[in-house]
Image 1 (cartoon, rainbow, N blue to C red):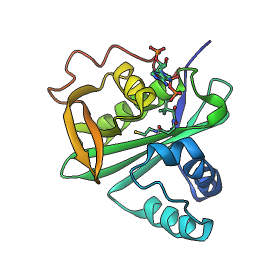
Image 2: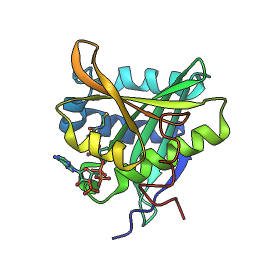
Image 3: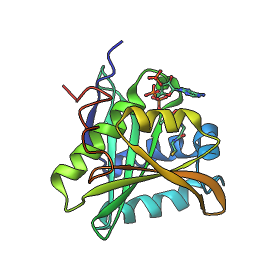
Length: 171
Ligand SMILES: CC(C)(COP(=O)(O)OP(=O)(O)OC[C@H]1O[C@@H](n2cnc3c(N)ncnc32)[C@H](O)[C@@H]1OP(=O)(O)O)[C@@H](O)C(=O)NCCC(=O)NCCS
């Protein structure tokens, strides 16, 4: 099965879709903040994020052109932290790996950012595998927001040579 994805900046029209993905059980369990987010609260947050110069949200479409997930970056001091969620019906098809790689390459190619950092719960092996397959390199283990996590990095020296591995580029 093809795992090609396309990536585009999110708009206000994507607000509800992103909210539904964010509150899906596995995504909540994978988050450092696991609480349910009411839609009214999400709407305000999403609108602010779309205009925040330190935030980027990308929608990811699958091989059929349907929305399959999103990738979010927080930008601080020429570094970005990444979070990702793939629609529960689209998992295990390579889209997570492709989304992480495509969105990270897009960000590194278009923004003054030299590396992308992922904080992943240690109890989320699927996510660790997806980031590894996308070319992220394990930096070490840490406590992040009180939870055992690993830190993985893409770009800069950390993944030099790794960026040609992993998922296919969007086609
Ligand atoms: C994590 C997530 C983004 C991965 O996306 P995906 O499309 O399912 O991932 P892929 O299909 O690209 O698979 C990635 C790898 O994980 C592996 N994997 C899947 N489930 C796994 C599990 N339970 N344990 C170990 N590896 C697993 C796959 O086999 C694949 O490796 P392979 O290509 O070597 O076979 C997706 O599962 C998701 O949205 N989960 C909920 C939210 C979340 O966890 N976000 C990340 C927070 S850091």
